[in-house]
Image (cartoon, rainbow, N blue to C red; front, side, top):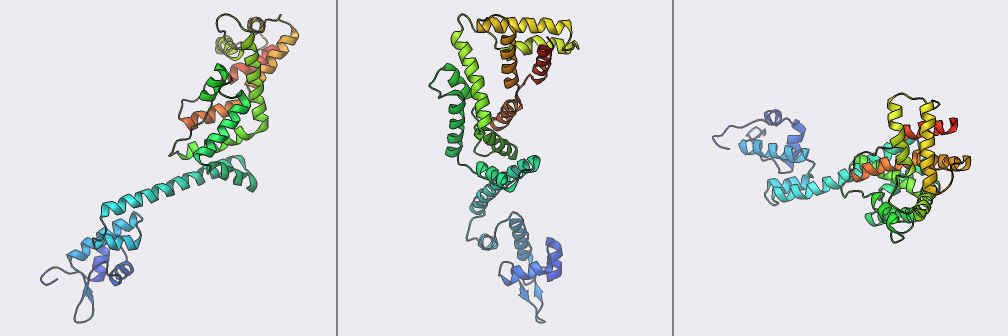
Length: 307
């Protein structure tokens, strides 16, 4: 330090933006070099300034003190230490996202401790365990993928695939979706919808036809835009058209019993749980939000009752 500018411990602390206590600690650990004057006061040179700046940066990045000392002593390459620490931070971030997901769902739903524990378990499932849960839900609802073309399509289109590095939103969606997939009532709903549609498809000959939900949406959308009421003559005509198409699809006459069957099918298709599943699926898989025709179905069911 002969001939070079030196700093007192207070000056060094101010220049580096740390406390005197921190400088003293780093000095005693041998991380920041110092010499003592004849009066016993510590003085620091330019090398101490540089080291203290590096130490502060490394500590702010969360690198432990033992590794910091090895870096400043050049026992460990800074790049290697940074890479190892980056991986540790990534693991911490994944765990924080998991906790955030569970707490977000729990806060939104007001779940009890037992439900929160279940959500935490669902969030921590391995990729293989998630696949098993999804496969069991899809098999239960639609039969195995080998059952037929419709089952294969549904297995592909309704399977959630959580990314390796999901966002908090995707994790929260997965937790809620997994709970739905385990719900026997929801499984029964999806199975009944599938069985109804599969039965109709098995009887059908000729080119494919629009299923009831698509036909309702197509028929009702312009009526909603025009402000038509469910009890209007236009609504009655729409009901007649959709019921006639459904009767033809079922190869049955348009009777009150058939309209009751149509109402039951549309009510099940409009179940909020089904809509919620599709919404959560779009979040988990990073797809565009689904366009569920809830307003059209609600309007048509009211019109169907009025007719």
